[in-house]
Structures are given as C-alpha cells and as structure tokens.
Length: 321
Image (cartoon, rainbow, N blue to C red):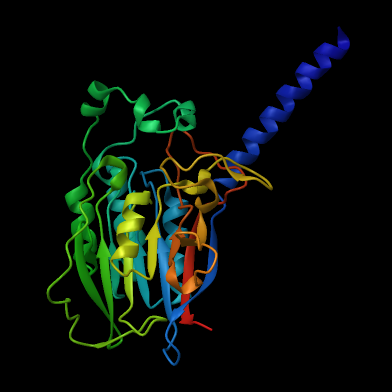
C-alpha cells in the first residue's frame, strides 16, 4: 500500500513539475536566425523578420516589450503571418508591439484569431485528423468577432502590403520583391489570386533575383495547408511563410511535434524545410523553401509550451551555392 501511495504521489509531483515548466517555457521567447540560400549569385543579402501568432490581450505586456526589442536586429523587411489577437483588448498592445517596425517595408496576412475571439476548446480535439471536425457549428457561429479591420488598417497604415488573397510587391532600398498571399486556409477564406498581367511595380525598382535568375517571389499564408503550398510552388514562389501550428506547442524531446492543427506533416511543424520533398533525381532547387514559425503566443486557455519555445525568426536570404 505505501508503495502504491508513493507512486501516486510521485506521479502527481512529476505532473505538477511538468506543468510548472510548461508555464515557464511559454514565457521564454527566442529569436532564431536562419540562412536561406535562395538568391542568385551576386545578389546582396536580404534580412526578413518573421512574426506570427502573437495572440495578444491586455495581459501580455512582456510579449509586447519583447517584440519591440526585436527592432535592434535591424531587419530589411517584416512579414506577419497572422493571429495577432486573442481578445479585442489586444488591439492597443498590438499597435505598440509593431510601432518600432512601421518605417520598414512589410507584408501581412490575417489568421482566424484576427477575425474571431479565442474561446475554450478541449485540447484533445487536436488529436483528431481534422480538429475542426469536433467543432459545434452553432457554437462556432456565436463566437464574437474581433476588430479585424482595425488590425488590417494598423498594418496598411504603416505601408505594409495586405496579401489576403492578393498580389503585391515591396520596395526594399530600391530593390523589388514580388509577393503573393492568401487569407486563412484554416477557415476556408483562401482564394489563390490569379496570375497578374502586370506585376506591381513597387516604384519600379530593380528586382531581387532568385537562384534561378527570376524575380524573387515570396508567399504568405497563416495556416500551411498543402493545397496552398502546392499552388505557391506552381506560381513560382521561392520562399513561403506561415504560422498557425505553434510548432506543435506540446512536443516530445527527440520526437518533435505531436500535431500541426492542419494537414502539414509533423516534421515541418516549425522551422525551414522544402516543399515538396525532393524525389530521387530531383534538384533541391526545384523545391520551394517553406518557413513555419512556432509563433510567440498561445491561447489564453492553454498558456503552456513543452520543448517548443515561443519564437520570432530573422531569416537572411543569401546567394545559393
């Protein structure tokens, strides 16, 4: 009997310790630095700060301060792949978080948690093949909207390009970068924009050239669904950005993410990878680079992370080879 009692107490202590650690890790963001060999020979490097999944409320001041401090990294460009808010009270903190970057070229898409308030959902739903299949349609229809128009205007007011089912271009120090993006695929808001007859000029700067010698094209989405990734490959995108997965949020050391909350495979839950996988005989250059951010926040109802620190990423685009 004492042995059984000790085992139970030991299990409870271990569980409490893991929960305590998970709460702490969720409050320890890191800035990751990644090199991407995507440019043509002779092109000057280009640095891009990737922000995603801030999930701000009026109780996330430490996250706001940390994001503001990223301005010290002096990126050339900022991309934001959505889910900026959890509650409407996060709008004013968001304006302060992004304010240090307002002078920089930028582009963004929105996520579901820019459109709708975060509500409690059982964590076990994420173990389903499609977590959305466990949602009650009536409850989903009753979720309060968020001030998404203000989220959009806050960013377009800084001169950032809204890529919600749209194309665009950035002027980065006299160099042009082509862009394409979609609204959030996780809630079926995506409609891939048709090819442009005339590429937006971005003040007619000289194009940045990719490793194939074509004008560099970047793609943005919130949730990295396979249908959108395939469409971006077909469109000539060289580097795509996404968030949404939280990197799995609860990961196993040595194994990685358990889920991605979309149809992307677990090993691409965060970080830089290629899409699609190269087959025998294929060249790596035939695949698109994909960067999925583990994001900076969580749902207020599950403020934990294990083996998956909150993150922003500074990507340095360099010549290939």
